[in-house]
Image (cartoon, rainbow, N blue to C red; front, side, top):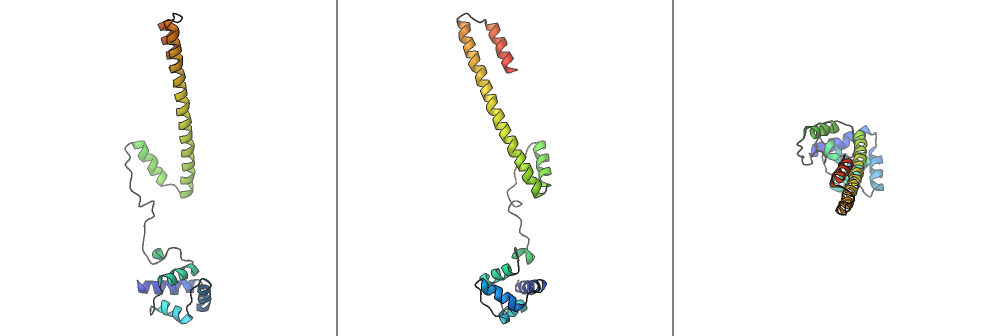
Length: 164
């Protein structure tokens, strides 16, 4: 690991065409004081930077994922999330297709799903209201039937019309 870090530091500095003096000056701006000789020691594997110095050098070198740069593969949190059990074939097909999409298109699909969920909730609410109206009308008609105003055949016919 020590050799990998020293090689990475040396290669990155040269790749970015940073002089040791420039790196030392940038580190000093970030509160880390080292000499060019110390930097050469890190690059040659003769010395090792402490964690704070190493992370600050990574900032200067624009290294966002040190472990990745050192050859370690760490799965994304979404990829390492627990698997879910899907029983229906349509759910499996949809999930497999979704996983093949780009991140950009996944966000678009998520927005569409939200729209459909709102539609379903609205639809369910309006279905509930319609059912309540049918029940309420049936109760009123039932009261009227008891009073002799509507026959039970007429009541049944009205209920069937509301349901269909």
